[in-house]
Length: 317
Ligand code: CNA
Figure 1 (cartoon, rainbow, N blue to C red):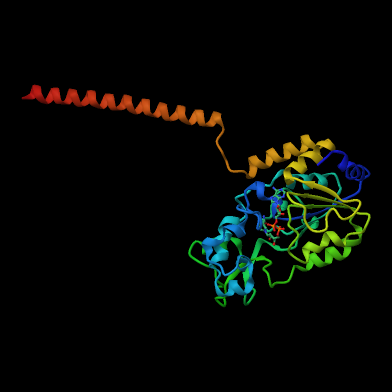
Figure 2 (cartoon, rainbow, N blue to C red):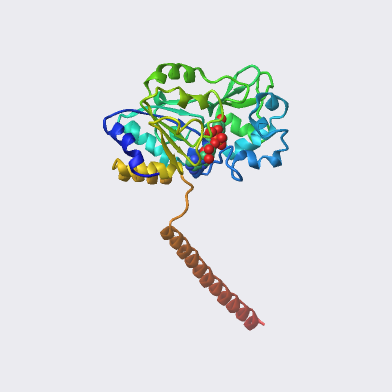
């Protein structure tokens, strides 16, 4: 990833051109959420324990009707609320703040774009999200709180018709949300800069979006491997690297790095796992030692009192 290869991208951004993002699971792996297809760490390579007939069955609506257990085992691992947004997510937020975000098309269901502060009008969750849930038969909605409660007892099922309930994430065999089509119809001709990140570009129709943008569009791939037809057009830029590394590099060139780091650190404090600081740990240890010292003093006093009582008893005899 050389700096000169970024020249056209940086010039276009400085001219005020807007950016459209096309995201996949790879933008969230550094937050701790596994993607589908990375060897060893991806969900598909870790599904053996679920005894599925084939890996994709876990997100297949017909298989879910037969046996929803595998899906709900995974849900516990993927459920939002456990993961903080990454540097890449905050790069999108920076583009929004600068007025240069056109749209974020995401295949992700983890809602981390929202958590990073991207407004609803910019986000197209092509494969739905965990934000809402409904019965697969009568379509009655169920709140996420109720789903979480019922999940502790087994598979959530509808209070009205007893059908299984699932989050509104799009399974194989289901249609994409209307917003995906309406936004893309309007945006398609109008994408000047496309950043395609963290996706294997294998799930259609999403996978074909980057090839539908106009010929003069600057298409940038930020991914650990080369995917799709990226690299086949003269304006294409290939950044074959981690998404966060890409975000850091672009922010540095645009001199947005201080803002990016601040946003990321604030996000870690707000949504990251709360590791106690060294100072807090030292204070905890000091408090424990003090408590132990006080207990020792009390024990000694108790022993002394016991000795005195025994002596008094003896003297009585
Ligand atoms: P995928 O097929 O698993 O591909 C991920 C791609 O990202 C691969 O090309 C990897 O090489 C690449 N990659 C992984 N980590 C990084 C990284 N740190 N930096 C750069 N590149 C990286 O996932 P897709 O998104 O292409 O597949 C579409 C599926 C995945 C959608 O239906 C999603 O719903 C589904 N999914 C979403 C999540 C999530 O919401 N976080 C997690 C797992 C799967």
